[in-house]
Image 1 (cartoon, each protein chain N blue to C red):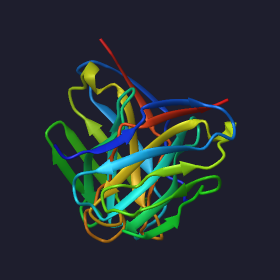
Image 2 (image 1 turned 180 degrees about the horizontal axis):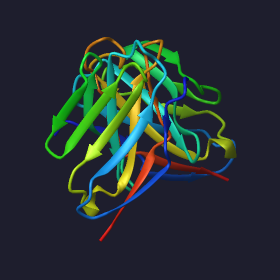
Image 3 (image 1 turned 90 degrees about the vertical axis):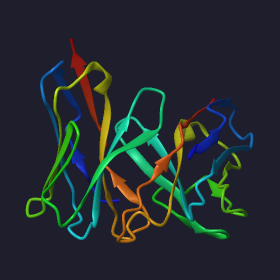
Image 4 (image 1 turned 180 degrees about the vertical axis):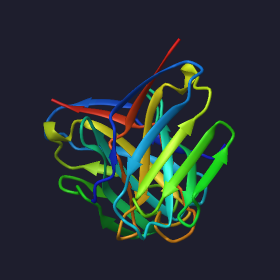
Amino acid sequence: GEDVEQSLFLSVREGDSSVINCTYTDSSSTYLYWYKQEPGAGLQLLTYIFSNMDMKQDQRLTVLLNKKDKHLSLRIADTQTGDSAIYFCAESDKSGYALNFGKGTSLLVTP
Amino acid sequence: EAQVTQNPRYLITVTGKKLTVTCSQNMNHEYMSWYRQDPGLGLRQIYYSMNVEVTDKGDVPEGYKVSRKEKRNFPLILESPSPNQTSLYFCASSLGPPGAGRNSPLHFGNGTRLTVT
């Protein structure tokens, strides 16, 4: 599949904001997703954004989309220790039959 | 509760001994898929199924088989497992294909950690 790029690690202090960045490749992707994976668990859908939107807010989560640069970001406000997990960005691939995932950003929240 | 159920959660086996990992979903989803997750490689799709009796290869299908005889079940079969198939496997399902142009997010099972010695 095509490459979806994410930074591998991010460490923040509890209470600060976290910003996880992603660049994707397929400009025709209709939806872009953020998934969260806690240790020993499957991927859980966090939020998504439709490609004709620039921003979506969902409680502590804000997704920003820059279609021109193919850049997606996830901001977590007031980050808590329970937010420590791996976060995956995903786009639908060219065939439309799969999601292309980034390699995941491991977020560590320290007290 | 809407869910994707995989079994077993953990499996240790030896090279060449056939095994099946089961996957079942209770959401009446048409689309189902298998991924493997490996360190440094992320998630890669093995096989997917658009509906009953309709399956197709993903990015890394070699060494795997699937079947879709019923809508709810999508087992992954390793006829002759090898050590390079040691991995964490995820089954996922969605209403339709992820890129169908409508919001069709994937719902994942909790994973099966397979070790082949």
